[in-house]
Image 1 (tube, protein in one colour):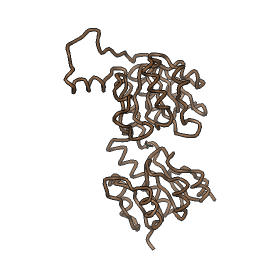
Image 2 (cartoon, rainbow, N blue to C red):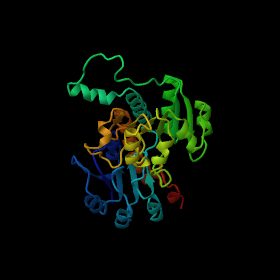
Image 3 (spheres, rainbow, N blue to C red):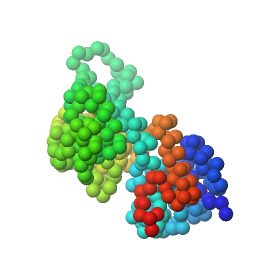
Length: 327
Ligand code: GLV
């Protein structure tokens, strides 16, 4: 019997073609909207494997209903949408797609940093509203990034790429906070490990690159913003719930920090009447960190290979819960 694979939305063809070459029966969700939770559960019930992504809710209820799944292959590096302890308890291996989007996401963090320092999105909007005005020597001023201190929360694959960009372009000093010290990255970037509080106190740019976990959820909150420099730029390209959006709005309005660049919000999508969207020093993007042709192609390939290898060899090149396959 052919294995039945459910593919939760339109992923790049490169990965899908790899799956088509194998002896699988594929069900592709082709509608221009994600499945509802009920559709996802009902369809998953009749399949052996699921290829899903970061907005598909693989929560305890889903897993309870779909405990028969042999593999879940996530098209993303983050997997906070999946209840990993529960999947592990049920013996379901979960794959993910690390590194495919590191360059692309670091580009977005780097771009947002410059855009916020120079009020780019706000100025674009003023032109669209017919408010170009005149060349004002003291108006619309931003600040320069040369030799500033970049603070990285979560110096992993993506954080390193952001730090490399900032070092090369602006000769920035790099400080970072992680659960554990990353000696290789320290050597590569001449980066200094600091306590979380010192990261907040010393960063000119604070860029978030960690995973969303119970420890990081809401960790950039009012008390964190109060510690930051009034000239600091906050960048989050990781997951929205790592910062508290109300506290961020207050911090910018009260000039406790300079501004923020967000590729992730809480909730997503951000509503058009969100006060952050009308602030001068705020730039928001709709979660497009991995949104390059190259990154998305590679993510689809890695997600497909996880499924193919699992059925051919019983192993997965990129697995979140390897203990499941070791059993
Ligand atoms: C994107 O947010 C990802 O986790 O890949």
